[in-house]
Image 1 (cartoon, one colour):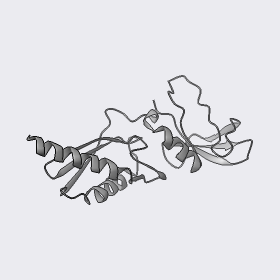
Image 2 (cartoon, helix red, strand yellow):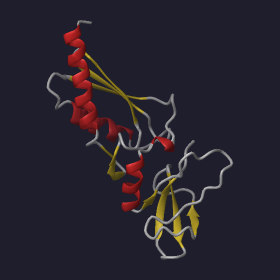
Image 3 (cartoon, helix red, strand yellow):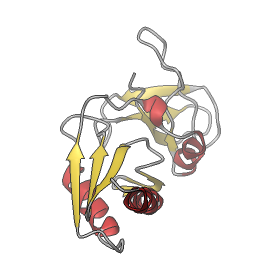
Image 4 (spheres, one colour):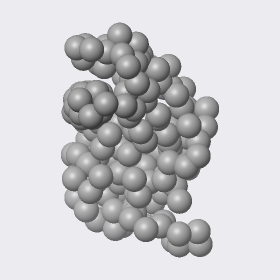
Length: 167
């Protein structure tokens, strides 16, 4: 590949990454798929952009919405005529992929972020996203999505969701 063509592809890839910051998680609109650590790779070949996405769970019902939103955003890029989105499961998505600043966005939306560096056998301790109290109780392991649980804060009396730690 000629140096000029390589620079063009690198520039297009950078533009795609910037635009993907605007594609939010369909179920958590305050956080982008990039911030969630779900965008694994972006590669440009000729006029085609290939995007590899790591779903948070196998069988996530929002996959087609994600694909549509990514495609609609990236087709805007001059020089891109086709967008190919592939869902990949190797490497598997883990909750440690969530950007540090995105964890505050989750809390502002009323979702407790998963703990960092969670390992099998660790106790899942969840602080309330509203009052930061550790005095919380699991109400239902299964929340509105497979990646979230429903908890209750015994301090401020609010129900809330928590993203499950995936390691």
